[in-house]
Amino acid sequence: MKTNDPIYLDYNATTPLLPEVVDAMLPYLREHFGNPSSGHVYGRRARDAVARAREQVAALLMVDPGELLFTSGGTEANNLAIRGIADGRAGPGRIVTTVIEHPATERPCAWLEAHGWTVIRLGVDETGRVRMDDAGAAIVPNTALVTVMHANNETGVLQPISELADLSHRAGALLHTDAAQSIGKVPVRPRELGVDLLSLAGHKLYAPKGVGALYVKQNTALVPFLRGAGHERGLRPGTENVAAIVGLGVACQAAARDLESLAARLQDLCDLLWRRLAAAVPGLALNGHPTQRLPNTLNVRLPRASGTAILAAAPELAASTGSACHAGHETASAVILAMGVAPADAVGSLRLTLGRGTTRDDVIRAADLLAATWRHVAA
Ligand SMILES: Cc1ncc(COP(=O)(O)O)c(C=O)c1O
Image (tube, rainbow, N blue to C red; front, side, top):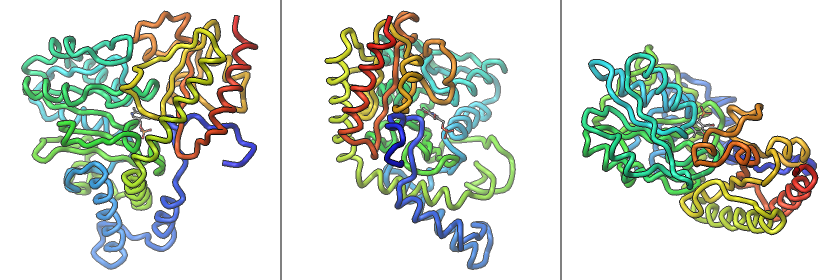
């Protein structure tokens, strides 16, 4: 970012590429153009690069490289998980999900619902977490799939995935989690979480847009969504996006290396942002759980103001009022409403998300700018 650019506090929308990611990708954009399926040396170089990346992603997740499928991103990974399990059933069945999922989960569930499936959407408590009692009542025998996101993109709230996985397995259901937002921010280990399927999106962890992966636990029967050749064990046909996959591998390697120190630094900066804003904005409220939350994510509610109006009046700051994927209109975020916040209050919400490039100075300037703008626009 250039020095005069707005302060970027929108790392949950997307992240810039790490320099080491760009460096690793460049040879696969310039010289090593081979098709990984080719038998000659050009093909072998590309194939080796994809295999190395698969090992790097597997190392971060502590899984077997053979349990990973590369996809075009988080959206495709979620669609493949949900449709891939549903299409393996003899007929329509039951899916349990939540009201706070990203559209990349909600829409494939809604599609199945329109095709005869029963879809149960769990609500959340005032901290944004699923209630285990509700989950226990909803996850009954004959449930095919439970799909609950690991961390919410707007609030950063972490869901009790291990407990949900236990419940699901006891009822004979599989558990899928969308970990697009949590990978690289907190430890994400599918085996410890006990999940059967897990999605990730490259561009949320300093890899390129348009690449992602789906973890599929060994021996989980998955039906391909796309039909084509035999790539990715026939489960995701299409010539691999070699350079992007190389980028994802290196980004995962960097995430594994830096996870602990980065999380601690961002947690400190997030706490500072909260304290400084709260001191200047009486009545400031937190949307989300005080501790069960991503260390980089602060979703706040400013009283008597619209988050959209505040951001419009503060172009020196790049942040968001909800999810960047469906921003642009002044309706309160469904995720915040689901936590029981009144619509008139919910529109005062701002999502401030920090990342590798965020400095202490950015946080102080952003807090002061937001407070001054709020004083200006608050009713
Ligand atoms: C929680 C979550 N899931 C899925 C996605 C979609 O990922 P992609 O943009 O790679 O398709 C996003 C991105 O906004 C997200 O935040």
